[in-house]
Image 1 (cartoon, helix red, strand yellow):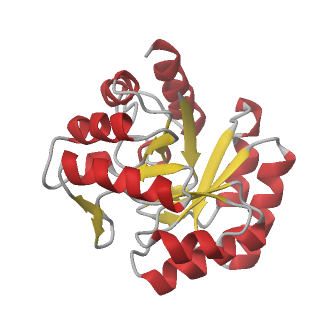
Image 2 (cartoon, helix red, strand yellow; image 1 turned 135 degrees about the vertical axis):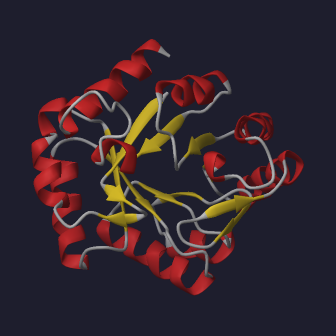
Amino acid sequence: MNFIFMLTVGDRTIPDCLAVADAVRPLDLRHVGFKDVGVPFATLEALHARLKSSGATTYLEVVSTSTETAVASAKAAAKLGVDKLLGGADATPILAAAGATACYPFAGRPEGHPTKLGGTPASVAEDCRRLEAQGARGVDLLAYRATEADPIDLVRAARRALKGELIVAGSIDSPDRIRAVRDAGVDAFTIGTAAITGTFAPTRRGLIAQLEAILAAVAAA
């Protein structure tokens, strides 16, 4: 199971993302992502270049649930050369706009900002099958933002339905949640806010210590 470090707080790329990317480089993080809001596009270009130079697989996660804005995000991902695009609710135009970037649309019913997730295990499973049939490589599941079902029930339903990659994003903020998603069959998960604000490991100081705690939790899961 892969840990994707998101350079984001509150669903926005952090203003000092370039400095933070440099600071965490000694940890040799292999999966790093960002959002397409919070900093200018020129900053995203510089950030993506630095991440690729470090050998990381890169991710851009769509914030908006509107089709028009999500398509714009997909075009931005294609222009940057991002490896994987996470999110977006209307898969067909997003897939068309993303070019060579692999797409993992939202399963379930994402709403609002910060995004919450509606949907039942049955509806999420149906979404997974439909999205893969449309050409998605897998799905992005906001399991811990769920409003209608137990998060792990959603994860298990998605895992049973999917042939491709299952990525869980949002509100994973403890070793217990890392173990839970691992046990439910997740391929990768994201953490941004909990690391950057220091809430993942409250007794540890500094971002490096938070990321080390997350990596240790992944190894122990």
